[in-house]
Amino acid sequence: MWPAIVEWSVPPYLLSGPLESTNEPYAIAKIAGIKMCEAYNRQHGTNYFAVMPTNLYGAGDHYDLENSHVLPALIRKMEEAKTEVKNMAAEPRGTWGRWCSHVSSTQVT
Image (cartoon, rainbow, N blue to C red):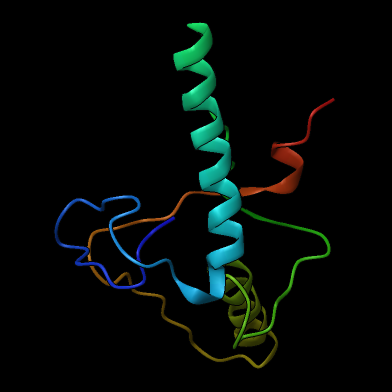
C-alpha cells in the first residue's frame, strides 16, 4: 500500500504513487479490502474497517537473509551470531519502527 519511492521524513501517504513491485499483489488485496469497507459504510451507514495484523513471525516462516521479512532475518542473524559466538549489532535507521507479533498472539479461537 506504500508507494515504491517515498520520503520517510514526512508523513507517509497511502496510494500516492506506484506500489512497491515486489509487494504489489499483496498491497492490491489490502487496498481492495479497505475500499470495500469504505463503500459498504457509505451505502449502508455501517462502520466496518479492514483489520490487518502487524508483521507476523513464527513457525513455518521464511528465514532467508536475502528474501525474508525484517523480523525473521533478524532472528536468523541473532541465532547465527549466538552459534558462531560473534557480536551482532542491530541499529535503527531513522525514526520509523515496526510492530511485530508472534503468530500465536493473533490466532482466533
